[in-house]
Amino acid sequence: MTRIFKYRSIKKSVNLLDIEDLIEQFNSQVGKRCWTSARAVHDISIIESLIGKGIDVSTIYDGHSISFSRAIALNESRNKIIFK
Image 1 (tube, rainbow, N blue to C red):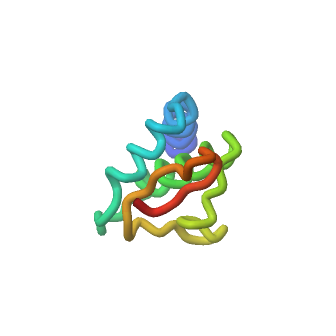
Image 2 (image 1 turned 45 degrees about the vertical axis):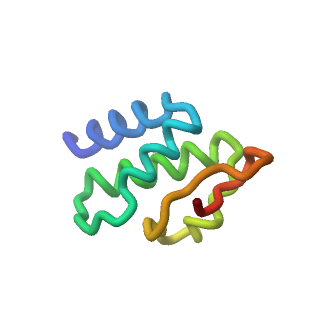
Image 3 (image 1 turned 60 degrees about the vertical axis):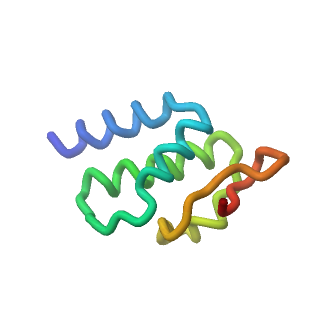
């Protein structure tokens, strides 16, 4: 039950962020190699929130894994993630 609450809590807080804050949150994870279930929830919440806001995340997410190899930004049209 506690895990479900933590997931919902993280998901809710991430959903409140605007696109620029989501990108900033993502970029703060670039290069980090540590892995926990809380980070997994946070990271997928960022991706789901960006998708929910109509942003194309195919540069960093293939439907199965997320790439944190490079920092990201929005393209000029503000509808797709690109590498910085």
